[in-house]
Image (cartoon, rainbow, N blue to C red; front, side, top):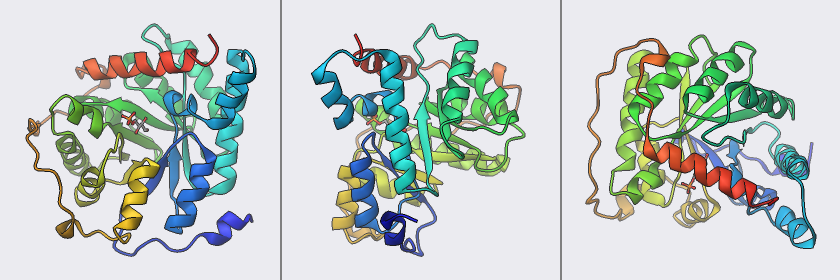
Length: 294
Ligand code: E4P
């Protein structure tokens, strides 16, 4: 047992949502655990890993190969695991728009072997879903990322049918929808509602959190998990670690609402999973990753 685990206390009893840190820096994991007294997990992605201080420092001292970067990513993930050994930690495969199924699956197997209980992040594309389908059957945990539509979440549920409850996360990105004038929290509410109706095995992980409005919005929508950057966790701590949005003045939202859709439960390949933001997100992650060694 490390001193970090000794620090852990019970989380607030009102809280039925797990709180994760969204960061590629173990120093932030220590900080979040110390200020909250608990931390249920952590998500990383290629852009966050590209900001890790140890990796940036090594890069500034000389060229790193892609294999060096993967080694460092493994060290970073293992350090996080050491700080929160019972936490659910997500690490992301490299994928660009051309990455094929076999390549994605091979990388997912490698990441899944880093330590027990790790979650492998895959994009919600045809190959990502196909890989998730194979991985959950092997008992691997997956986190399906870059979710921007209810149809994509329906496809995640269908592609991973048979998985244990909690073996699969879906990560709808709130902030990136808000950025284009669409009410991102509506997507969370719609997916939670649909999954409840389907008694889904998939947990909804609110991602791309930019402010306390998103944070409280996820809690009040009965989202299973929130992954929050350090800045927003700090704001929550300053707010008294409560769930009191009544005393929190949220921005008046002028954003376009997302209507709920009654979707059929069907074979995952039949859902329309195309979304521009998923493609843009894949391109951005790929370019941040490649920037580390090119
Ligand atoms: C976490 O899993 C996501 O990758 C992350 O929350 C994305 O956040 P961003 O939209 O602020 O980059």
